[in-house]
Amino acid sequence: TNTPTFTLEDVCDLPNRLIRPNGKLSLAKINKSLSIEVFSQDRTILDIHAMDGSLISRMVDGSLISGVHEFALPIDLPSGLYVAILKSGHFTRTLPFGHVK
Image (cartoon, rainbow, N blue to C red; front, top):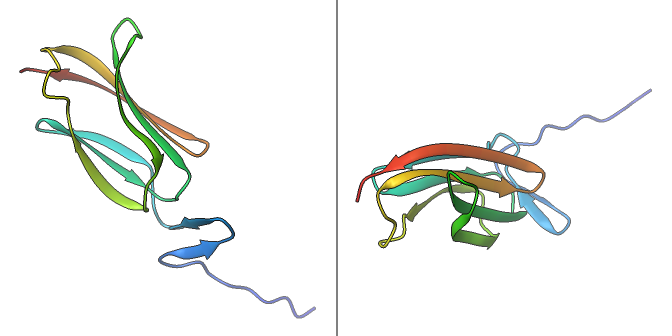
């Protein structure tokens, strides 16, 4: 049979969402910011939780363009240990981190 093949490269515009097939979901702390990389325009949520699980701050809730984004930690965030949780589409990343004010 003559079955066509194709390769998705760079940014692909699929119905109702834009994805970057070679992208990845990542989360890192850089100085006093959280850096994230998303690969689709799915709803993205970035939360900071205390070690007891209570929500401290919702930093992002919405659709982002695929790529790397950096968000400053809340200026009133006290020194302590926290967990950042990044959800985008069906994927989740967590990052425990310490913060010194």
